[in-house]
Each structure stands twice: as C-alpha cells, then as structure tokens.
Image (tube, rainbow, N blue to C red; front, side, top):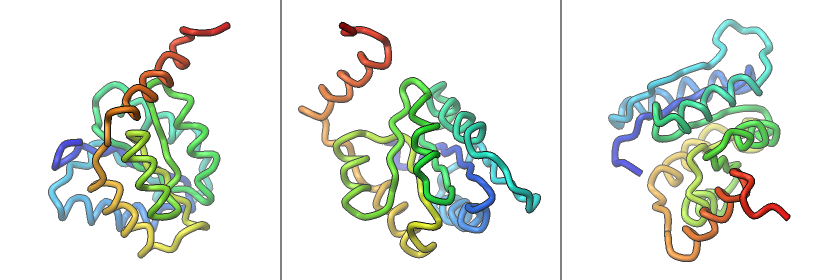
Length: 155
C-alpha cells in the first residue's frame, strides 16, 4: 500500500457523519479522496450501488483503497466482495483489522456505525492504513481466491 493513498469512500445514511470525519482525517494526512459518494442530502439510500461504485473504482485502479461506512457493515461487505479483485473486510476490532489487512490484503475497509463508535472507527482506520500485507503463504491464499473468482478450478 502506498504511504499516501488514493481513496474512494461511500456509505449509506448511517455513515454520513463518520464519513465526513474520515475524509477530514485522510485529507489532513495527505491522502487523496478520489471519490466521495456520501449521501449528504439527509435521505435514506440503498448501500449496494454505493458499495459497487467504490469497489469498481478500486478494481479499476482509479483508487488504491476503498472505505465503506454503513449501519452494521455486513451487507456492505457482501456487496463489495461481489466485485472481482475486491477483498473487503469488516473492521470491528483490532484483530479483524490485523487479519483483513495483514493476512487477506483487504483493499476495502467496511465500518459499521452500529457496531463501533466514531473514535474506535478512527482508531481502526489508522491501524488498517498502517498494517502491511504479510505475503508468503497468505499471498498463495489470495491467489487461490482469485482463481475461485475467475471460475478456474471448478469441479
């Protein structure tokens, strides 16, 4: 992961306040928010199209990383992981962040505002951005996942 990343961010109506804080933190640290799809109109929005837009931006290389903020984050993780080459991880603890980045090379972080408070979310964001991918046996596992995505190795 580059020291200063290009980041795509979105979320549903549950995440707007936290997204604004995250964008401020990222910008202050020199990261470039290349796509911000936070719904700031105060209306309820569906998360799947927003997740797809962020995931596709990462998959195309328009962004290095993606961040999604929703209510629980569960549906958002599922939606993001439907896009080929996306490895979205739900960030709910330091352990989940360490595994998603270190072992799974997650390129999209999903935060649930009903799961963690804003301060914890920002702490987990810092940890996620700072955690390097371990490679080694984990790289082979990522390659196995890519083969599943491509339909290779099907019985």
